[in-house]
Length: 283
Image 1 (cartoon, rainbow, N blue to C red):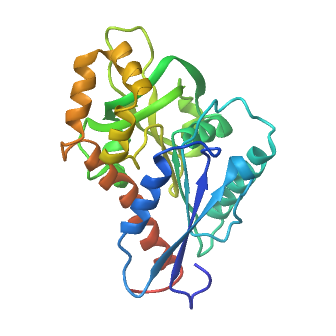
Image 2 (cartoon, rainbow, N blue to C red):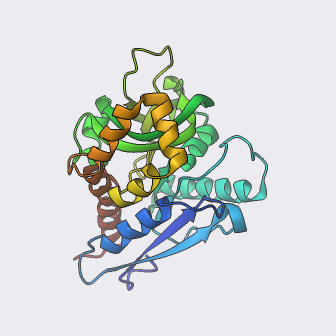
């Protein structure tokens, strides 16, 4: 918010899709368009093409949403866009540590979440044995039950998962030192000998992230599920019955529709309220 006289709350969208077709950006923009803002305030947003054009915003925005994206979260260390991206995140982290009437709120999605875990060295980021794609249950941990962004969703809740990489083996001592909290883990898979991946972390009072896609909606997921390549992945790893079940989930208001309407909107509502309050303004 640019000064106490301004009624504009500014959001920066950090696009990490590297110019590849996706439904994630549409989901993020849809949520921002529908977000309620108390009068007389307004919400403005701007998209930055971080990976493809090395467009990185400054620290003047109030809220940042960092998207998912393709490829490995490990393959580009040292790339200029990544240096600029982490320089921004570090700057926002420092601003939040200072005792001042300005906080920077950030939500990290999937690829961005993996990058953040790697950057802070809070957990291992590894290649999955196979692609995770579909609609799956996610389980809250103790902190997840107290997390405001998760208050409107069930346990377990259902989320869109789309990744070849994963965050595992959290360093609990380091998380405790930095104030980070584990919020959720993936579903139990008793038939396979693999560790359950971390699905959500509260990095700080202002920064949170998920390894799943809380911006995903039934329309976007339907487009993916009907693609031949995506269907083959699900059927190969989970069977035709599971694929058919995912299609049914799209019409269930307690599944991904609830997740989409619950998590990022709660994050935005909290960030907007705190931005207004910290600026010394009232509604």
